Length: 448
Image 1 (tube, rainbow, N blue to C red):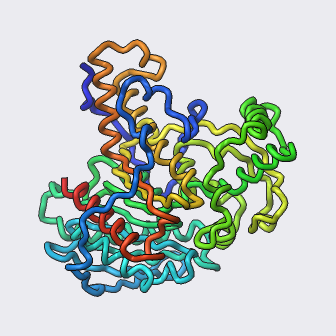
Image 2 (image 1 turned 30 degrees about the horizontal axis):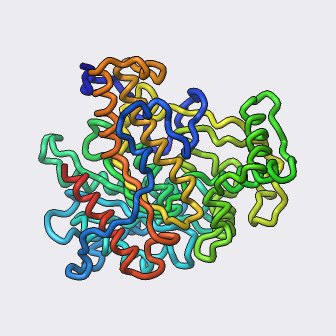
């Protein structure tokens, strides 16, 4: 029997340092089953997006207190506000949730008043200290300022946890979870992926609960090019890349067979969260043409290459669906290995919710499958196994693969919410119940 507990020497990588993840072969598209997991093991891939389920309700009987502390934290370009809310019961900073607002979406979505009912639902269910980090993403504060702001808030929380546990002889490790939606979900995901390091005192990020995160800001441009290829054949092709030729062939074939539409194609005209909203926010947040290709902006790029080149100057970035298709080049989506070999990063527990009618549904389905695939691949490699070996496993090895797959099922959760599924928007009983379930899930994960 292969042991799951082999020790591995790993090297810490600090967020937001750039990671040299490298490419490691073609990426398997999210809608396809990852082939090495289809050999009899129970897999998350069989039911990636699960039906919305009602859970425990808290806010009807427990009310969150007002912010017990408001901190004005100096950062590189100005200062940000941290709103610190004490737990319903128990000591402060024992378990900490970092809350990141939606960013430049939904009108006042990055203002404390919009977030208060969401935080109330999370806090009542989690019984954690919640720190709302008022990161800057509005005009005049382009990316990566938001990344630096979030990291400053994270470091402030780490210092508070260290002060609380300074008498523990470093035996008490603080527990941190991150929560966010839309751009805040992007930042929460990147922070969780890079600050989930083993054996780090005084604390590390152990879990993330995100709603409708933007995991790939490149999607609008790739959708345009593939649509142009399918309809008009106007696609700049990288002749050295056979995968691009395959894209062309699939596009031409799809004109006859009518493939399933992506969520971008289905819901780009949504009046709640549509293409115009994402493109407007993208142009506000990212003033350089290559910024949203960064792994800390588009977390899916931790696990694969963008699949598109970017020759445009910043001044010509498209900001509406009516713009002409950009002069980009489609390229191969190559898989990247994450966590990198030699690091002490371990993938965090991750809970994602996305609306059934959200323009972000397809990219988030791909992202959750990438997490799952990355986790299972990492375990297989520590046991000396590769995908090509899995057709010839003995009984003990097959049991081990099944066990690894089941553990990934537990670690990564994905659910579909009715409609667009945004927290804080629409009937409160729907989004509030999911926010409460997210808080309850974080409570359970962080108290293990």
